[in-house]
Length: 196
Image (cartoon, rainbow, N blue to C red; front, top):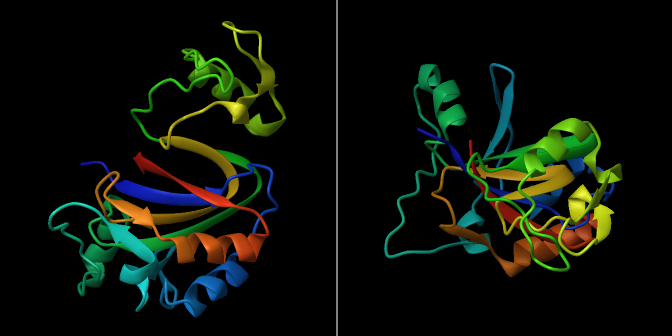
């Protein structure tokens, strides 16, 4: 069964990488996350007291497990498969790519034509797709791979706030959470949904 994630990331893929400890402190200050838990080389944050006020859940009655398993033997599996709601912070010096395993081809930002060879472009250009030129075969637009429009199924960045434990497109970050992240990093943030 795939693990589903709501991922928050700066809108500018070249935004400076965040300091993970400072980012955690910022999110703890608003009650989004609790204290870090480290288990078998995995560090995650249980949801904080204000989590449900900072993330809106859609649907009639979403099923969300907010507490980690009490049995420590099951904790590693639960983190991996996203069977409870928790947050991980990922920070990198170079631009990284996150994508849903079933992402549709992204589109040109000018003409909207799908780029069917996007996976090949990105695979060839790792580790730094943000510095890679890309041209649209439909309209001739010259830009970078990071300009491609993925419609919330993929994104590029150096800093990721990864929320596991909810179904795709079931959760939406609230305005206060996005404003807090923008103030922290001095740039706007957006979000994507992936299943891994």
